[in-house]
Image 1 (cartoon, rainbow, N blue to C red):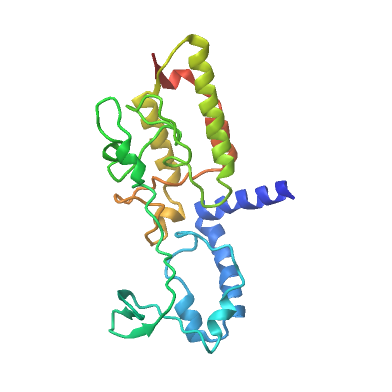
Image 2 (tube, rainbow, N blue to C red; image 1 turned 90 degrees about the vertical axis):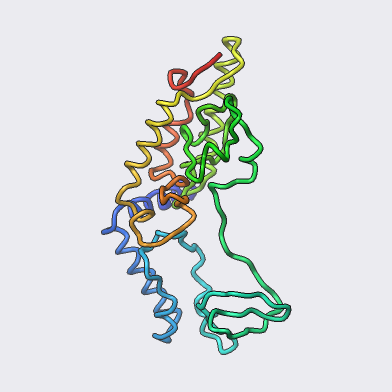
Length: 253
């Protein structure tokens, strides 16, 4: 069963990378929407105006009928104010509310811990990333000796389990530590040219994908519009690339 789930999720990458495949997936999603929401007006308001996969795809498929209940109202206007007893939309309408659930997303390129980590030149990791993080293999950063990241830049996923990525990164980290220990070394960091080559390869693989061409903004893209979050390939290709530590890509001392 686990193998079947893995293959199914890996296959989703083909839809994210190729518009023709995604059109078939979108047709299935729209058919499901039509079955769950009979009202064509409400259904139109629930239909995204961007390509499927451009934002995070919801896995749950059983909530749509709840939006058709008589005690439920779908409001798509932007909120402008939170008051003690309700919410105010841009048109000035106030909706009574006793519970507010914040589902506003997050900024993966601006982690608070990045401000506390400094490299060889004294610059913080936040300053080095400057709203567009770059790392070698999503694990190490040029100029930051002995810094290892789990789920760093370009190692998150939109189609499969990130546990697979973390396992590869931990194997890479252990390989680096074994290399240092065996040679009596104390410091390791990626060569700038190795990191640049990895980033360039990721950007080339991202081109044409729904993440950057789908017509939306999402947490996949940083402030510059670049995909600095996702690995745009299969998990097994990432594992093959990352899990073994390659000393030639690193500076050691």
